[in-house]
Length: 348
Image (cartoon, rainbow, N blue to C red; front, side, top):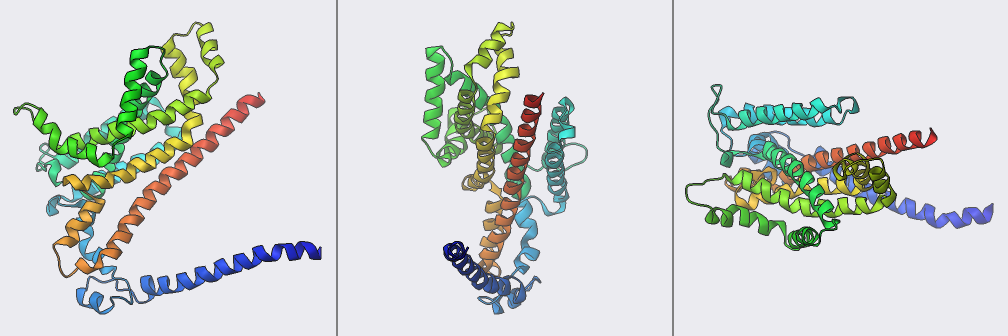
């Protein structure tokens, strides 16, 4: 018994050291973030507390620019309503009881409503071009649209790379390796500046659709490899049994192989979805002011509030963390649900 206690002492000591370090770090953070912080939109008080306490007043002063970018001030109820509708739809889609074919129709209706709210031009709403969109609604629109477009393309690429047709297999493999070999920034620059030069002058495509397509094409290459890994985890006998039952190739893939592949690849897919959401921060380099771009827009031209970038960045980081954490938790819940469903089928 004594030897067991002595053997555990290094672990106990290590735990105590980590607790002491956490206390030493948390106390100054608590004092800076809460005790000595300034919460009112008072630039003078913030400058007086600089280095001692946080200036959360910058959020009270600049929250509209941070959340909505350059969207016209009088019309900012529209991106607020659009953001709330998207968030409610995301939360509702996480509820298994709503997983019905009608959910797809609900999302299409939501997309139309969000488009009307953001762009306007009908129902008495003033027209606001996509170049003036920004902040949280732009981040959500780009992330969701890029993911929805990338996933079916990724499935086709993964199936094509496993095809027995040499030409199709080579084309899919070449696309995947080519896109994965270049940074996303280069694709965004091509979509923003090079692509319009290749189109006839009479054709005009807004910046936002071009950027969404670039993100979707980039994400599809990574998702395709994840799905291909899931396909390799499915036993070949599953596909052969489906064919023996008289199923066509498309039916075997839709009902037998792909569901099992998605279940095997679910953790990696969720990780990629989180990555797509965070990659939306890169679109600020092509003058689309999503959350991080709206931050520089809000503080860059105001010398009174420019010194308080840290507090604004912490707010933006908290927003990103909340959404990424939500995606991760949904993925874990879905994994648990699928695992329990598989266990019930096996017990039968």
